[in-house]
Amino acid sequence: MPSLVIVDRSGAERAVAAGPGLTVMEVIRDAGFDEMLALCGGCCSCATCHVHVDPAFAGLIDAMGADENDLLDGSADRDANSRLSCQIRFTPQLDGMRVTLAQDD
Amino acid sequence: MTQLADRDYFTDYQILKDPYAYFEAVREHGPVYQPEGRDFLIVTGFEELLEVMRNSADFSAIIGLQGAALPLPFTPEGSDITDQIEQHRHAFHGGDLLVNLDDKPHTNMRALVNTLFTPSRLKANEAYMADFADRMVRGAVAKGAIDLVDEIATPFVTWVVADLLGVPNEDRQMFMDKIREAPCPGNLEGDMALDEADHPFAVMGAYFAGYVFDRVAHPREDVLSELANATYPDGTRPDPADIVKLGMFMFGAGQDTSAKLLSNAMRYIVDQPGLQARLRADPSLIPALLEEVLRLEGSTKQTARLARRDTSIGGRPVKAGTRVLLAIAAANRDPKRWDQPEAFILGRPRIKEHVAFGRSAHTCAGAPLARAEVRVILEKFLEHTAHIDIDEARHGPAGARALDYEPSFIIRGLSELHVKLTPSASFTPLEPAPADAERKADTPAIAAISTGDTRLADLLDNPSARELIDRHFPGISEDQRIGMAKGMTLRSIQKFAPDQFTDAALDALDADLAAIPAQ
Image 1: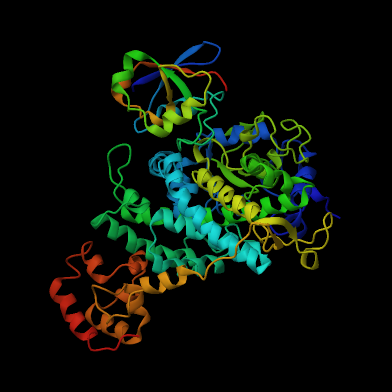
Image 2 (image 1 turned 90 degrees about the vertical axis):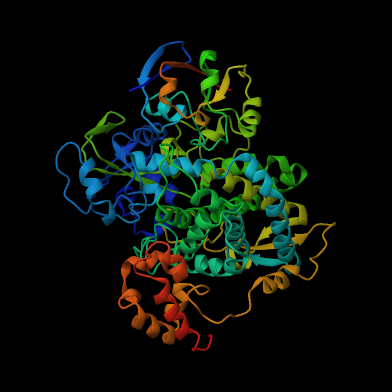
């Protein structure tokens, strides 16, 4: 099974198996990274599943929508690699992708 | 006498009136407690409740609608009952509704729902919501005294979701009437499930079937078209029947909770000293008000999970087959998590982490809609009034209100709230409602009945037509499987069963139907 590498806020990283049909947020959540709140449950309505995505994979992930862009604007930790993980569908091409949980706002 | 913590949450009307006192009594026994003589656990601790909600590997959502008290339809065997649950899914109340689903079926359906109430869609819909709210509130202010629950809250949220989904104008009144007569989910007085044939929501389901099949064939710019033509993340297409159930569930789940949030919020607005003046002066505080009301008195008191594997909660071992009541109302007042938990404090730090909408995989997908619609209508109430009061003749004075609550173990909501509205200085009453005239104009003239124009349900309601159907298609009128399709015309059903409903057979039926007068 393809895997996703998750870096938590302390900098520790762990590779987790990522099942088909899930979003990156769901993979992180189901792997037990409770410091990611994902408060709205994946509805693109908050910014609490904010991650920084390895730039090497930027061309392979779903493009950012206007709602996501607006929501990320509210985060102090936003940078060029910022994404809401609920808006990225995990596909086998993303095997080995590294995401870093953004700092708490 | 049985102490409060061991009384029956599911039948005790004193607990219905004040579930908070009961949950505090339960909390005294620790964050996870098994009441004397009961075979389920109650989780009142904030952290422990989060632990269960996050652990969907060990806990199934299957008992969400029927609750923790009802016995399982099977005897749990062994340390993992996942297969047993799936074998008996249809024996659970609403077993195949979104809120009760697990694993891949849940993830799939959830993926469809996640895109429905995005900020941009809600923003696009806000002008409509605001206009509708404005007309309702101005009508209420002109009247001076209203029952907020029955006259505003329920019709408002029904109309808003009907509009978002794309329910035709001419059917909306029927939906409102059905919702008004439907018991809340988790009704204490009967155990009618949302998916039972006679339940008002099942009646609406028939209409939904018609819409969904229509949208598959003729997509439009509405949520139902989006749902009807969506694909799951794995590329497969949902069964239209699943979309029908989803639409029905969205009415069932969204209506009561949003409507009750409005009346619960209004009670705080009136009864918290100085609050309404503060909100009128600065309406941008309304979202913060809503979050604190959601924490203190959200519309969902509790939900439930079933342990499907041997597991633990807060270090306490829990056997597969254990039913768990998750006391949302208690977690949101847990003193370990909330400073002065009983106090109403606007702008608490990290208030959005309350669990009024749940957390993790089953987080309420309608939360953004509920927040938007209740905010919009509260803005209108504050704009058009100089003062809002609760009717003392009905509910007694502040500090000693006499309030009745919906008899539900799930929903925390007033059954009525009579308020008096003093108009603001700038208030102008409503022009004579153009909406009624519009609605009448929208209603099509009664046409002759036929297999192309008349829903099967309406045909079956007409005794002469029913007799003809029985003659042309023996057994159809009694066929249980046809339930969901009753909202469709026979010509639409033909697409799904072309061998049974041939053109020739339908033409023959039409020839006979033409001879009976329209009702």
